[in-house]
Structures are given as structure tokens and as C-alpha cells.
Length: 494
Image (cartoon, rainbow, N blue to C red):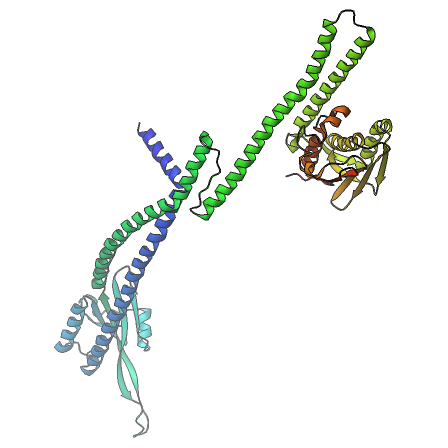
């Protein structure tokens, strides 16, 4: 039971950290609290530096005065002076510290603690001080200030009488250690007060951050609710959440996706309806013809053969529709289904022209092929052959008597182009944007007459797009149509 509770708690934490609201909350909370911590640290450290500087300055002033007294009373030679001893004890008690008087021979002549008198001290600071260099050091870990002050005596220089030259001679060193407990106590008091203020500010920041994150997340919550309504099917209306620019952009993007989904759904329904109609029409015709033969007695052989030819034509038409549908399904698959190989495009187009030439001859259409230069490209030979064959075959079927179809192959550094131009009936301008739709026919009666299914251009476009190519069309009704196919020489794997 305990393990399950811990697991749920961890899951809630993970969910909170993954949510945008949780991240905004944490960011605002951290941004609010970090300056408080930095300010408290800066105030305490600044106070510590100033307090240590002031304390060091005070001690240094008093020690230098006392050092002059030591010379006046010849204390380095005789430590029995009650006045000096009283002053040293007073200094030691005042700063809760220790004072060592060291002569020029590095021997301790006075220790206010009374434990090191007569001993020799060897210290880098003391030796430097004997050379006239005073120093002070603050030991934060142990809580004391240590300083070395030279005990100097002004003596006359050994020069001719009346020159007035003198210099300071270092006779000894005062080593003073002063406790820093008062500064630490004051810092502890300031730290406690700062923590109280910091806690109050932290609670205020927490509340404000909670409110701000809630306000910032409100537009996204609206967006989620709107998306849930769309998902549940309560509405298909476009989403509009204009509280902030980001949600507006998300809403616009989703509306575009929703519109695309609606269009695809309508296209799917229309496609299913068209498929059903196209497949049912030949079957209905065959059923009518077969019923006519069954209901009639003693049918003449000529009539029987005519009806059977019509039935065979309808079967052929049904087979063509099914084959085109299968080809279209294959085209709808991903580009991973492409069988890419290096293909001689010149030979491929010549083969297509040779296959379709008998159809052109039957319709009295002249086929012209012009190859500007040799072209080799990485393509799926089967699918590209199907696409180009559909273009050339349509140009033949929808041509005028004694017309022509010209196929031109050319290439650049990155792409090759195949242009299929004809002198046919042309395509109305308002129909150009629909010619790639499945089962769309510009002239339905003529398409029925020549056996079109309305799937050829859709198959062609799918095959070209699978090769990362493009297809463009220009047409003048009554004068002809020009298709331009552009495909990369090297297959682009995305």
C-alpha cells in the first residue's frame, strides 16, 4: 500500500513538472525567491566587511597609541610597569582577545594570557613587522582578527651636529588577536530577522506566482476545453482563443488542420460515392443486357453477338476502373514503396512513345518526340512510366483529328523535365484546378465515349509527388494543353 502511495506521489510530481502551468509556476517562484536569497547574503556580507573594517581600525589606533607608551616606559627592557600592564589588560579585556609583546630577538616579553612569556616566536608576519611592515588578518572560521603593529622609536641619525636628521627604529612587535564574537552575534541576529522577512516575502511570492501562473495558463485551458469539445463532436466550428498571441497562433494552426480534415473527409465521402457509382454503372449495364437476352426467346445471332460485345466492353471498362483504383491505392502509400534505381530517361520515354503509337495512328494523331540531351536519373521506373503514359495517352485521346502530340525531354543540373504538348480540345480555365481530383471529368460524355475513368491525372500527380517533383498545366480551350513535369535527377530522401 505504501509503495502504491509513493508511486502515485512520484507520478503527480512528474506530471506537474511536465505541465506548462507547473513550469511557469516554478520559473516565477525561482525568479522571485533567488533575489531574496542574494539580497540577504549581500547585506550580511556587506555588514560583516564594514564591521570588521571598523573594528580593525579602532584596534589599530589604540594599539599604536599603546606601542608609543611601551617605548616611553621602556617596557621591552622592564615589564614591571603597572601602568602599561593595566593598559594591556584593559585592551585585552575590551576586545576579548590576547596581546603579545615581542622584542627584536623574537622573544615574547609579555603575554596577557600569561602562558607564553619567555618563549621565542617564529612567524612570517612578526618577521615582516620587525622590518616595519604592519599587517592584519581576519579569520572568519575561527572568529578573530589578528594584527601585527611595529613598536618603533625615533632616534637621531649619526650625522654632524645640527643636521636634524632622524629615523624610526623598530624595537619590537605587538601581536594582537581580537575576538569577533560581537560581530558574529549581530550577524546571527540580522540573519534571523532577514529569514523572517524572507519567509513573509516567500509566502507573498508563492501566492502571487500561483495567481500569475493561473492567469497565464487560462488561455491554454480555454484552448484545451475547445479542443475537447471538437474531439467529443459537440462542435465543428473553428477555435478562437485570442487572449494571447501564442494561443491565437495555435488556434489558427488547429483551424487549418481542422479544415484540412474536413476537406479530406468530404473528399473521402465523395471518393466512396464516385467509386460506388463508377463500379455500379458497368454492372447495371451488363445486368440490363443480360436480362434482355434472358427474357427474349429465339434471339437472333446478330443481336446476341451485339449484346455480348456490349457486355464485354462493359467488363473491360470495369476492369480498367479496378486497375486504376489499385494503381491509385499504391500511389497513396509512402515513398518507402518506391523502387529507386538509375534509369535512362531517354530510353524510357522512347518506349512509352512506341507503345502508344498504334493508338495515335488509329486516331490519326501525330506523335513527335524531341530529346534535347541524354538524361539519366534516380526514379521508380514503373511508377514514372505509368505517370508519363497517362499524360501522353490523354493527349492522344482528347486530341482533334489530324492533331499532334509533342513530347520534349530536357535536363538541367538538378532536374529533368518532360513536356507533353498537344493540339487537342483544351481544358476550360475554371476546370484546371480540379483536373487532379479523383473521378473528375471535364467533359463527361466525351470521357464515357473514349473510356476514361477520371483517375489518370490523379495517378500521374501522385507518382510525380512521390518523386519530390512537380507538375504544371497550361491550356487554352479549343487550342490545346501543355503539361510540364519536373523531377530531381537525384532522389531526395526525406
